[in-house]
Every structure is written in C-alpha cells, then in structure tokens.
Image (cartoon, rainbow, N blue to C red; front, top):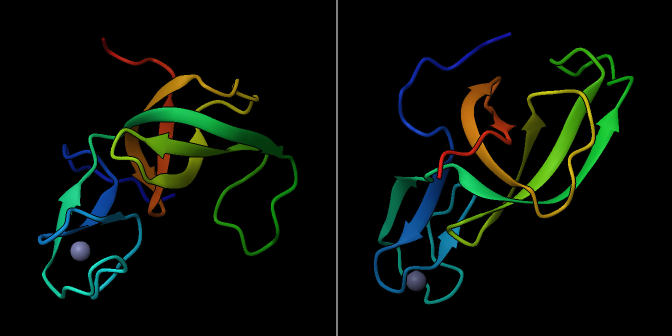
Length: 115
Ligand SMILES: [Zn+2]
C-alpha cells in the first residue's frame, strides 16, 4: 500500500481566486463564476462524518484489503469527500474526524481530533 509521507494535510482543494468557490476535484474553470483563476489549496483535513459503510469484500481491482470502512466526510471547507476510516468499523454520523494520511491517494480519517 502506498503511503504519503507528506506532513501537509492530505486533501487537495481547487479554490476559485475570484469568488472562493471550492471543489474537491481538479477543475480548470469555476463552476460558479467561470473564472479560470483556480488555486490548489490543502484542506485542514477536519470535518464531520455524513455517512459510512463497511466494505467486507472489496472488488479484485481494489487496492485495499477488506474489510474497510468507507466514509463520506463534509470538510470544514464545506466540500464533501470520500475516504476510509482508520478502523474497520462503522462510525456514527456527525462524528468529528481528521485526515492524517493518504493511502493510494485515498484520505484516511481518524476520530482522534485535537481540539
Ligand atoms: Zn469563481
């Protein structure tokens, strides 16, 4: 499994320099104001769980061995991303989480959030 050694928070965000619209995936034109001045910023990696589920038998093409907890997280930057929880158990909706690394470009979240 490929781990990121970067000390930066692991989630990239594409932010419009003109209106501040933020997207979780690569974009070259702002969906809100059509500006092409897009900056890549790093999310703080903090957010709240929107949903989670356990994948017990990932497909053969999956780079992760099961079971894995797939979670959907609304970041504090108001964008929704998917990732994995660091333990193979369900995590309650609304739980505060922090991305602490990436594996195969997937953010890995923990519920150990520093106040
Ligand atoms: Zn814009």
